[in-house]
Image (cartoon, one colour):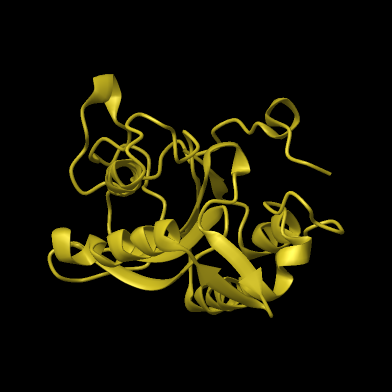
Length: 206
């Protein structure tokens, strides 16, 4: 089944009381505009990136250099999407994220009126998407061409067991390309949603 934006559109399911700017680990997935296969191809169960895909890889690796409060874990650039684990640290220490207690003060978690919230997950991903799109459009002398989907998927990594399973999912993603829900030519039903739900009920899009 091919991707259909009207059928597959997902509403935002972000946790209402979770502070996405606090220390914690996150699993994020960012897809290309209309699921176009622009970053490379899968050959023999491995990703072979083209020039565009290598730009995405380079920009993500720059994330922790540009933002010292971000620690990068496993990531992979697929033909039309990107998976990554990252940790946002606070005062030099990373902690496993926990939902905030009612009444506890917290920093804003969304970008309101176009104003970025420094250090938040939405701002980190927004900056990454903007930097990659600018470089890639410059390569093709095509400013303004959309590269990414407007939204992205995120999952809070609650514990080390979930972290291990997510790392394995990322590392083996190319081996399951024929079943990947992002593959326009997939040959079966992807089990990503069931797998992600088994980690925790707390997942969503932004």
